[in-house]
Length: 265
Image (cartoon, helix red, strand yellow):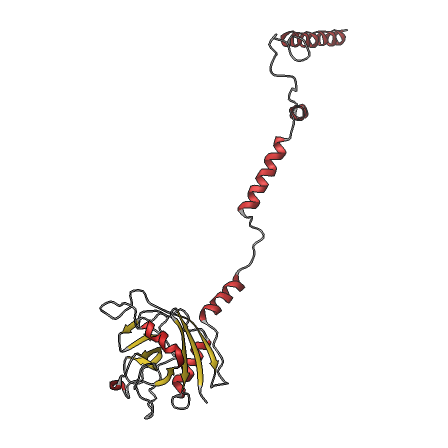
């Protein structure tokens, strides 16, 4: 049973046919990583004209990437699978039995790679022309594209392994933990709430009339009489403030004399 994955890139789709019978470990690794969205937004970090394009490293450096097995896995070399033409999909490694998530696609015949890399698929149909477009990107002296194309997503059309269970991404686990820890603290007020409270308090104070304030002064033993005179030197009741004070003092003195006379009699 063959497998099939559509690799959607910024230059178009790549229809990849897989060979799980000849190289089960490499195909399982590739399919599961595709199902997990591992390759989403991976750039093609290495492009060598007439040779190959390379991708599969989430860091984009060419030094990253992990396999589903938690460690590098061994090469799977099959005598019938060779680098005879462009469109061959194979695992990228830095040495024998050092395969992880990175892979490359050939742009021509590469017979000298025989036995060094695991061939696990090929680009088929008219999507091969999109591969040609990938090869046209300008690169620097280290074969790194100046404006790298990238993988947008991968769609598994035919999964040859019905027992694959995609793992939960570490990022999703961290997000879930953060959501559980986050609790609303009702004892703390937001800035908006504080501002609203201050506005209400200010409004209440502002609404108190002068009469109310004067009434409050009477309750505390303070005089509620006008502190300012009008332009004529009289208060609001039409009398002189000074004369009113003198009258009150004279009445108090008279009352004291009368009380004193009664005590003496």
